Length: 404
Image (tube, rainbow, N blue to C red; front, side, top):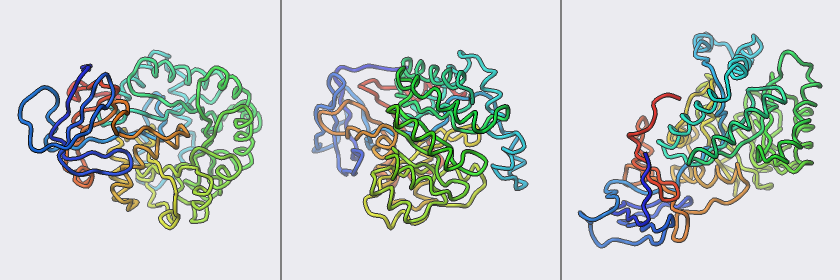
């Protein structure tokens, strides 16, 4: 359900987070023709009048989910007992489980089935305050299947108010039916088509134990850059390879993601290059890992983004959860976590600065229950998003679908 207001006042706000900093106080935001016309201080509580009474809430720039594997079919809950017994991600993958199980289910699913799954997932993300989401292919593992998944993502982007930023991730895993070198060449073979047809805005490679080697990754990244597609990497998650530093220094990567095994010097290289360190604090929980990024707090001017890492192995769809875990697990400053989840993630997936919540900007904002970011974050298990507003359209959270 959506309501499109030409004029709208959001009043009795406790403050607003503009994407960089939080401004405390009683405010009204005036929207006209899908733009923020004014943000004004109130002298006292307004009890009547048209618009939205946001008493007990603050406004924020909406969340950008900086890392997801949005398009897939099937279920992998059967892996949970294996993980409890101590099986690692790589061990499950080597036994034909993990990504390869999802690849089979995804290949078997029709375009319409996959499209419906994506649209339902976007519904739930918007309910929790996410309005821009990076979405990777990667569960096709053939040239034709990867192209199919990217086309479905682009179709979903045309149909839904949430903006999808598609990423080509054919180098997600090695299909068992092909030799390594043959598949690496196949991944590269469709880069020009993806660029020319504007099916994706970047290329991602999973470089780690059980996936792609550093040399294979460099070959794919070089080919992508050569056709004009920016790059990013799954970096230093399960074991240290140094690919985050390499991708930043040699390929000017948009982001290096995960970084659980990265070192202080790696973060310094990312800072120097402007590459975003994209953290997914829910990911190690799904992998039964206790690893945390270290050394990043000691690096000045490091750009940080956040993502859910939504995937069949980590069914976290709420960026509210990512923000809270960044604070509680990674000990990130709460307001820095809000910045990472809004402007930081956006920079990491687009390479561009996101317009702040300010006068003259598009009317994109969310209303979060609480009188400050800190209060919002401490309500750990609750959806605190009262309204999601995209270009002046207000969505009612009571109307969202339950299944994703």
